[in-house]
Image (cartoon, rainbow, N blue to C red; front, side, top):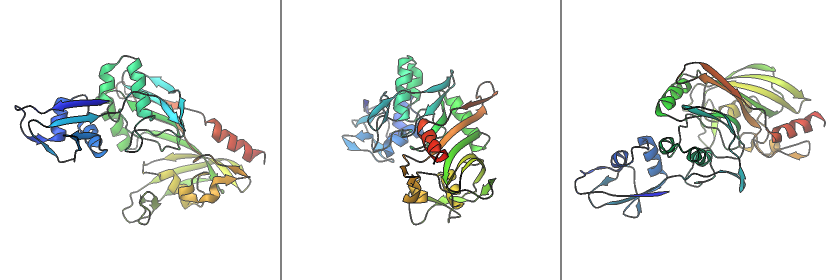
Length: 312
């Protein structure tokens, strides 16, 4: 959605993001800065730079995400809500869905679908506050399915964000691994940082690594080929579960990034994605303070792979 502004003579010279915070108060400063970084804000038809100073007469156009639906491989999927109240919404994210728009993906994301949901509910104030990253206090990778919490108010966003920072959120994942970890349950405590040789990857014990802890428990073994495993991260580093399991020599099935092409086929079957599911999420409700917990079952594609492993 395109919104346009013209800087008036009475408006003093200031930074672009400061001007937009005043003109478009429904969007947070961090949200506006993200739009600028994505090249979605223009000044006099030119893509704006973060530190741009505006002056009277400047014409500013802002392109914000529009309400829409979830898209996976061009197909529309319904938005599955596990719970909703005035403060937050719990979503069961399908695999293949990007959480928020990026420079290359501007529609079909979870954000677009949430905007569509709130628009239908006629909550105009809430919709405005959800631009361009609607109350997202955490995220899941595109290939990861499962439970997410999304804040509907700034206070809920603040309180939930603090819980994630303190690592007091209960998060339980399930995955299918290549190989069998030894022992069958334990704790992985390996720091994680960006891989020096591959900018899109992370690695254990790299140069600028941060502490990372993951508890794991094997739920089922499929010979010496694979396992169904439960994971409980105590920290929230990028790609933490994928890196930690790979460090044990047990990368997640379908995770070519950390396991190579060999983990993308098992028992003659191609693995459609990274076999990782965010099963359970527990937290203190930002308004009542009561502990709430939500879960979703592993999706059909994971069950299909698991059944194939069971009977092969």
